Length: 439
Ligand code: MG
Image (cartoon, rainbow, N blue to C red; front, top):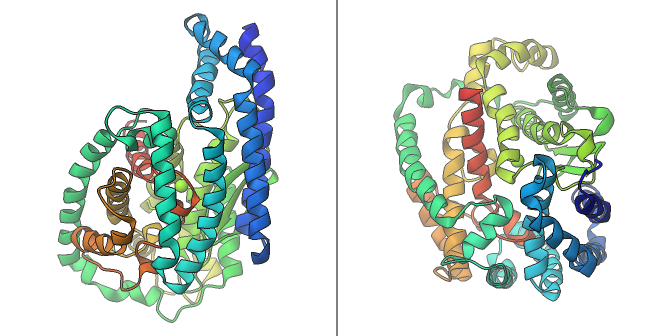
């Protein structure tokens, strides 16, 4: 876009290079998760760290900092769009200007190594393998928080990176109310007749839904939501994600379970929701800080809206039912719309967050929020995490992981980077609920 204000115009010219580095980082990151041969992980870590340094150099450039300062002084006089550009630049700059560059680079390198250690630890179900890396990540997060600054809780500084304005106190208020109520709803469900009706098990036990057919259904659903496959694609990765590699290149990934077709369809809707949001951004915001959405919570509201409000509705099941029956005529014999609807909305307390239903999902997030806040505030030691994890799972969901790979080691997030990301999942659920209710 062409800004009217000369300073903002110059800022945008300069910012384009930062945005380009970001796109290249996304290409490498996508490739790391989808294609990378295992032996190449260390060189990929070095490539990523180099780009991190390049981006950091750009943010630290004296001329750029001066332009941003000047534009900030004029912010009251700017129009909405231009003021938002300056606001967003200041929000991102806070990280690069306050945290020393060597810490940022160390963060990037540590997280690459931690990611590799986490993969191994999860595979071998050995938390000890990951423990020293996580300990280092926690201390780096504390250092980052200290540099960014906070009033009383270092977790506030980290939360704000993902959801501007979110604080630990807000989070405690949200989860303090949500967790006990959800746990009590769950207890009621577990006693209900619907829960005890095991006939839905027949849809998964000893069933085979060929992966290639599941992929076709996912692509069908994605096309129907309006996802532009000429400007995106769907691949496979162990942790599904959406990544914008460019304005006309918003990719998603999926994964498949041969005996259960629900997951791949819901993932397609979820990641497709993220992708639709990115594809829907006005073209004129390309290479500006207005590209890519308002915040992670808002982004998640779009994915959860397509997944839960739309995807798990009876109306959508009625629409999808003939398609599912055409693909799986034998497997779904005698399975009407109503039964499919119950199948897709089944509530079961489970160990794995990414497979959780709507009732239990936020309980998984409550647990992670509490642990992160405690870790960052030195109230919990990394070595005690597996035990505390089990205790909280028992209290909130009534299930206990037998192995750490199904407990504390299940998520990739703590190996990847700063803490403070998890609560945005719950915010996303709230926001899409409100959008559905009031829009
Ligand atoms: Mg998501």
